[in-house]
Length: 208
Image 1: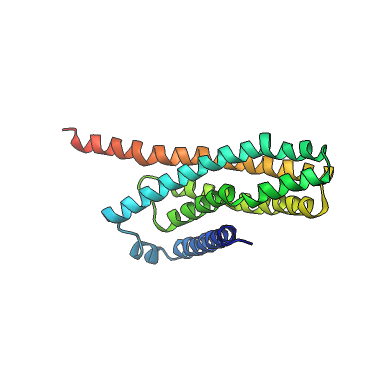
Image 2: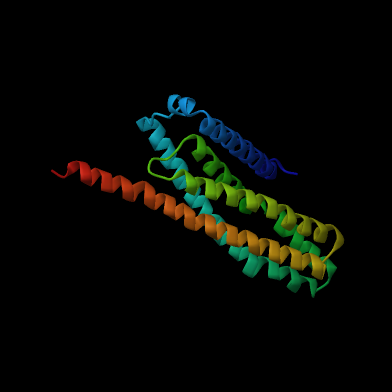
């Protein structure tokens, strides 16, 4: 496994640990109102800028993954069946070529998950926490489904094309593409809340 590809599971592990820690922190603060008031973050300009950068990164990576998920579903994975028609050697060659270039496709997904997990710790002004948690939940679902798709790909790479494995790959990636689409839509809602509400507040302060 290349160091570049190894970065993907490491990012997913970091995402899961950050999310679990944030969930534990939220539960603890809910049962300790006094501690919640004491630990309420004060948003400095520097932290606000960092949160905005994370938000924009999360949105950009979300929509990159929306496009890559549907391209894989509608274009790349159907080629598996097409190449199998030309024999096991052609299929294996295509499979090897695709998997060797996989990091460029999967790394943005890891960055996306990590960016949204960090927004739990560095909240973005005007963005409801429920939106961020909804995206985190969808990212967890993406991680779970990815194990199914990756398992089907790995089996076909070592054992050859199989209609059952191909069907598993298609439906699992279809679910993944839908998850990415939902994340993309929620990320746009977060951006809208961040800057629309900020602009409304500014106009309200300026009005006599």
